Image 1 (spheres, each protein chain N blue to C red):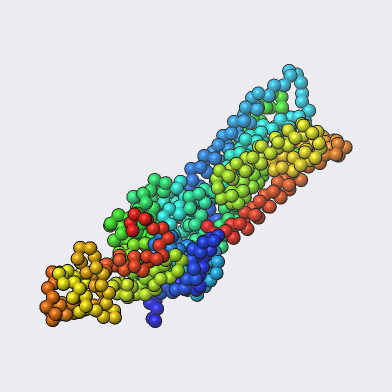
Image 2: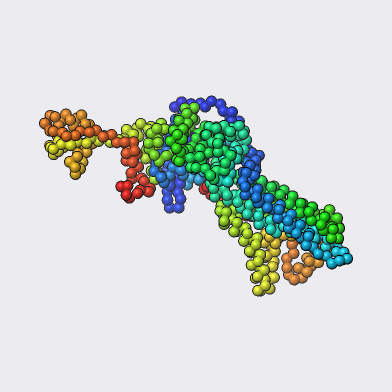
Length: 290
Length: 303
């Protein structure tokens, strides 16, 4: 049999490459309305809530709050919104992957990137970087809006302190980890409704269940387990702590037989959740028929 | 070139593809024919690695699809209309796929022009008709200027003009020396497009031959005969290969002997014939005959 030879094509030199796959995932992320809406809402909510908090702060006339209290207010004004925007990035994190399974797009993706894992890693990188940047910008904007108002109310301590700036960065890091955790559940369940229910349940409902359990039983284990949930452990990332109160809190917790996580430990616990969930998602993605 | 060796796929207790082996050669259009549920789509998905074979293997130009350095340049696949995110525009969909292989934007515009999507490229895919979705799927398959094209039911949902376009375009691509493998559940479609046909029924290969052989091989020569002296005629034409079916209306359906011989035998015996009509089985009948025992979903009424 003679094989007909093809005329050379201008595309003969092309290669599947990871930079290209990252670019592809960036095009996909930015070309969906849901992405633009979600990230827009993150910025609006964070700034709005920071503004609201700054406006409603009411100090007794003539009172001068301690430096620690001032820092705490500044951190709260910048990061209070994270408690709400985490729900938005969680939904987005699920949709980034479940939307592809729901529409059949995933087949086009995996035909273009048949190794699959490259496409999933690229998605995670694009989602994480975008969420971190949007989170950091929204928190910085909230701070920029809130601080002039706060300083007008006598909260004049300079906020350019690592104890203030680190929790702000931590807020952006927390949003990023929650988005990737949600992505992990989305890649395991391949279904928008199931993925969103799981991540919101884990972030919102499960901590409440433990709180009720503690209320009923007063058992310390309920609190100790609850401290390792993603939202509780990760919540430490954007909390203001000063050295002395942190030591006191750790001592008290130790006496009561409770676990105390500082912000770095909290971040590590949340990161562990992310790694385990994502690893399960990757293994299933590689093995399953699509 | 697609080489399939002993490929099987089991879903639970159901064997969707059962020990299938065949080769799809470059330079011709190879049709993949079979009733719905025969395992055509599953086979095609296994070729590009979306489904994992239970046993056997599928190689493209000597190795598995996933091991090629530029998969989209090797194979273009239309596996399903609308394997596309409905919220994205056609242009962005193609742009994202092209980016994986660093395929330039000019090529994206080229395939949009080729498939006639220019007017709708900026619209979100959710609002596309089946036909436009199909054209977008074909555009995506062409992005990497692939040597092999795998098209699952490419004319599904296309208007007559689109059907003709696919037919001519696939023949043109094969003429350039490319490997073209397309599936259909319609024999008539295959007859006008394919040079070679692989017929699948219930996951097994029923035929793998040039289109001409399939038609000739499966076509029984049938002759309709009407005569007042039926019994005499039947005795005269009797032979080892000859079968005669009598119907209520006095019509004899004779196979295994040609109309000229029947006429001559009748003349010798002085038998009056009222009708002598050779009836060639149609392509569609040939196909139905080939697959009649292997149809997964049969409508009771149609029988």
